[in-house]
Length: 405
Image (tube, rainbow, N blue to C red; front, side, top):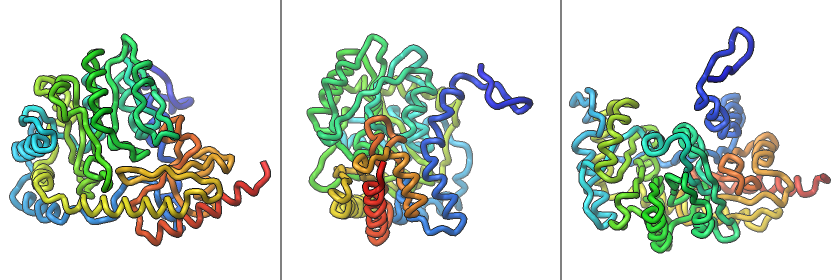
């Protein structure tokens, strides 16, 4: 136990709470400052979080209304509503090319909760979890909350942030229990090839590891690119788990509807944990989610097209300007921009850009050490705002280069 605060306001907290103190909302402090400025009436161009600017899938609102009218507001169960579990089993069987049963799923309110449950249930104090750097901002927190130690494997920006298998092999120790894989990747937009997914599976089997895969951007792979999953291969089925949601694919992050998938015996073992955390999510949201999973994917297709076009727009407007360098994504809703030529790290660039130009972006420092000199731009704003934001970013970058150190 540890004391936090001072004097009469000091309280005792656990080491988990202390260790998470800089791994939660602090990652988004530039975004929070921007929201505060907007609340004061400032016309901030916000390109921080991955919140789709398109309406959610049109079938969802009627489905939610119908389910509410039908009284679908009672308690659920710890695993998930039958219709949603059936839709998930059908979806994964079709996409992965091997059979999945309803016993291989647990339903959660969003990918974040699913990922927390997987990590909390599969690793513990003294274990190591390998994390590729850069990484999504909450990954450190879910690993630390399980008591495990983080081992970071850097991804090389010069090679498009692709998986470095040799570096991964060198990072594995007798304490390694899991590898956290994010593909398609946030913040880089990188994808996994079949060969890379297979190699990950082979390493997991060889060393007795869990592969815990965050695949929430699976439906946002750009035209001309493909992304494989270790979950595709039956040979590695006993070592692979994944989580996802409808937040990105159906433009419905506020519904908080996600799931975890893996071996049935693992899901059975994790069920008491899920019940302890939540004891089921909302039946009316589960009904709408099942419908979304069985839909034609039109919303995801529209989002894919929009994000790919916007990514090209950012590349055209920023790459090579004022020393800026853009990493072209292959999926997702973000673009990384190298700002090191300005002499600033990602955090200082983002905060100064916000106050000087009223453009809000995420600092690369929120995503690890590799992107310390980078910023992340969200593609979830209209084209004209992207154009104006890029104009201001270039102007700011030029002002920094021209300012003597």
